[in-house]
Length: 134
Image 1 (spheres, rainbow, N blue to C red):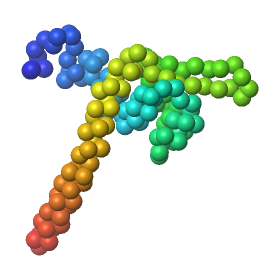
Image 2 (tube, rainbow, N blue to C red):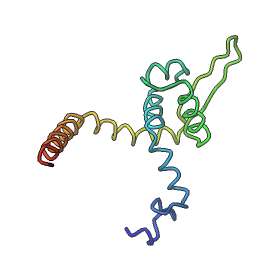
Image 3 (cartoon, one colour):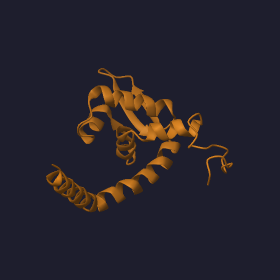
Image 4 (cartoon, one colour):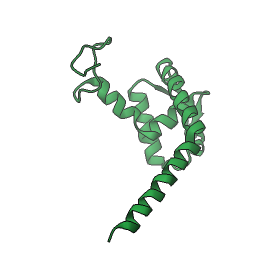
């Protein structure tokens, strides 16, 4: 469908000013993606998420959770205990998204060897091309 055509929902993500464009921008973050997938199986505490999401910094985890909570995908629950306990879980909207993201994650895991091989071939071809240059 051409970006000038009307979409069934009245939004057009190809248009920079469209609200759906900013939703896609948020979803393009690997940490948003992985956090939603990690929360698909249920509630997790901050430390549990940090251990599950290898490589995420505490600052990035906090930012990601704030974005997901702001956008209505994650619910944050604070328990009145000492020390404070905070748990995160997906909202209904977040669960809906997680189903889609899980399919993409499965595809990525299944086809990772194919992509790895293609990258190796491209790298070898690039090396061959560089050898020919004067």
